[in-house]
Image 1 (cartoon, rainbow, N blue to C red):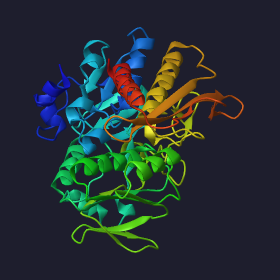
Image 2: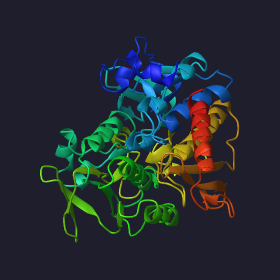
Image 3: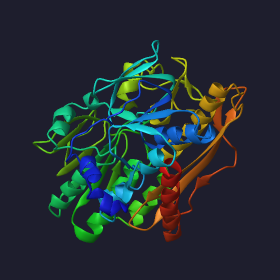
Length: 425
């Protein structure tokens, strides 16, 4: 099914919040492996446990959404050069081709002693091995007034691609020419380090072409751009001069949607017509409920990096954005995909009585569109260090672009198609 046709089907309506969420009618009482979360990490883990076991290990994937919507590339929807259907894919191949049992529901509680997962619909599923890949939870309470502003739809985040991505785009379309779009960035670590700067560039591209008197304000709690800084700043200075303004060390503490104000610890208030406030983040709610968030003031989940097994509970594997990252390891979709493969291999090895890979490796590439076609990237390779029990960046690997090019834009779209196929196909 083509993505555009899919969006207009009942599944697509469900994605956009126009249909109710329902669980599958046959929920197993137990599975060898249960996976919570069908994003880049969880869907990959579910698929690769099946592949690496020659489809012999039963896998249940718990995911409330009917379709996979990619956060990478979704900023182009905000900028207006892509539609949400173009970053949306069904889970069909996981179930039909790979035999993953998908339960369309939310996990509400994990009992790591009884080895069970409770669902919002009331059912309970037992497990031998559990993969927890819930992404991040936005800490609305870290910014005064944000919870209410979000609930009313006045201030959006769109930090999980889907309905909010479309809604944010509509806010920009409705904003009068000459208005201000302000994006606030929390202190690192947060999901997708270059993501806010790519989004600012996408909005600037839209303004330059369709609302040339409008401005983009980047209000960053960090001292400087956290990823690809020189590249982004060069683009803003040359391509979006007079449109983009970057302000570092601007930690947002409050928002007033009625007055259109963003407030800071030590700086004057900023007024904007569209406020895109990103609060601080922590491990997904289900990981917190289960007590897996045992690192960094209980924000992130500690893992054994060789297998991604939790340091808080046996036979539970935490992957993706919820973990306490190793040095120089980004919270990215590509990295979550790698986590899923390493965890899947370790789970199959443990269930089969084999040795776990002593030295796994990961790689990562983050592409950022600075307009509708030109792209910059950062890439890295990470090897598990047996002595220090962590991942370390391989010396001389990866690096950043020399500058944005259309060819990298082609690479970026090919990367997206390939990784979506790897996760879901």
